[in-house]
Amino acid sequence: MSTTGFDRTSRVSQFVLSLCLAQAALTAHAQICPHRGDLDETYCDANRDLVADSPAMGKTPDRLVLGVSSVEDAQTAMKTYSPLVDYLKGCLKKDVQLYPPVGEANVLEGMRTGQVHVAQFATGGTMYAVNFAGAVPFAGKGPAGTGKRDTYTLMLIVKTESAYQKPIDLKGKQIAHTSVTSNSGNLAPRALFPELGLTPEKDYKVAFSGKHDKSIIGVQLGLYDAAAVASDVFERLVAKGDIKRHQFRVIYESEEFPPDAFSHAHDLDPKLASDIKRCFYDFHFPELMSKQLENNDRFFAVGYAKDWKLVRLIAKASGVQMSKGAYQAIVATKKK
Image (cartoon, rainbow, N blue to C red):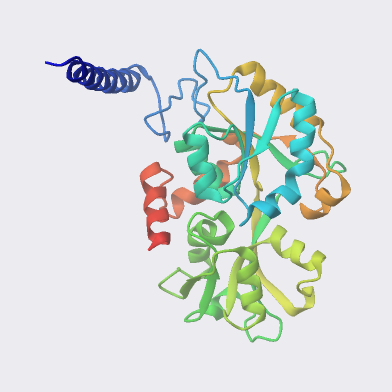
């Protein structure tokens, strides 16, 4: 056998050995984990706080990458969050960059694969991020005057000039939902509306608009009879002058939910994770950023086990699985 052939065979053997060792490590990890709960098999939750445990040796990346999932384009993300990125650079004394791809699926995959270290996820998306991307929620935006994180509600809205006065009036009509993973735009309606006499797909036709603002404008334009939307998005459109409050009637409003939150990757060095939290809690939003984020101006501490309890119950009641496979099926359907 030639030297080249021997080297090639050796490299193949080493590659196969590496795969076997990696598989053995995963198998061993699965066997020694005393509790995992709803988390993906990659993670463990030995302390039962519902988020992935930190490994013995955490990561301390030279460059910290921040992901944003709630906007459609990188330009809007940079415009909104560049003050935070600049502040973190100085506070952490570390290079901090915004993850170029935005959107829930991209940022989730980025955190799962280790490309994203800190990320913002919407209420429903946070559950997927925790379960199969190893996300640990730690900060939610809110107004300094209240001393606590912001909240929002699910609203069922119709045009003021319509004949619909109560939810049951919408039987046989078309109601806009936003996206499959949205809490107020899909999960909560599926869990809460049946008690109002409106079971999705049975008592009314569901039309997915893609986003809350599209649902709201769709009602305004008469594209939908009603829409299930987040109150904070509705208020933001009113503040921007995109819609007039008197054009809509709210015929149902839910209990309060936690809004979007920032999470850090579970495998960061504990000291770095602690420093990131401190910097977030000390950050004061500049005026423009505050206006862009519903007049919130601070970050407050959040905990997944407590603050997402109602959201988890709603997801369970709606029959939606918060697993990697379930999310990948959603993404695959969207691509089709």
